[in-house]
Picture 1 (cartoon, chains in turn yellow, blue):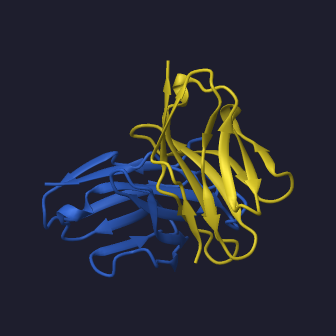
Picture 2: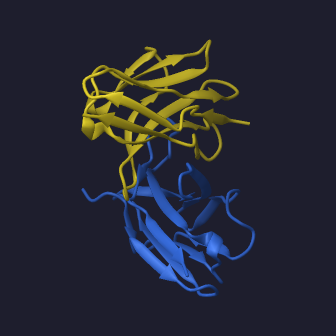
Picture 3: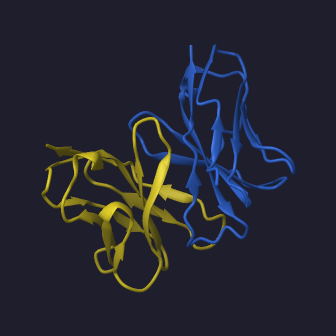
Length: 114
Length: 116
């Protein structure tokens, strides 16, 4: 069975500092991995995805993520955090075959402190 | 281009009533997914539909819940005889024809359902 784990419920970081939001996955075969962000009372917004190729994926709003096959991880990163980055972040894995539904992690709340 | 439109944004029902949640996918999208988000939790898959067909309903409760996506009009998630435990945010997502696994789904802003 496929699964995604986000081990941190909350991450606090000072504005201007680098941030990392962790995600590990368990799938059979090659994973399709996604990061989404959710602001209060809004839907999920797509940030970036890993399908194949370069392990470092760049996405929206200056975010990037590093795919590490040996550690089965797909951590979200940003070199310099902004207060406006404060939100709920979800990692997701998608079935390659079948119905293509997402399996989501439980989410990590990011707080960027001014 | 309009994104995925969900309405209503907020819905209040009393126990035993019916709740109807609507989702209009992005233009050109014929694949619709419904997810449920409980407070402080991630999203859980409920059902996947293509026009006039239910493809995967493995996440739907066996009773009281149903979904449709007619040839014309929005997708509807229907909850009959609602109970307090149905209180949640319900999100709809859509993807274009083919529903390729490497393409992101596009999410609406959700319907917040509250049961009194």
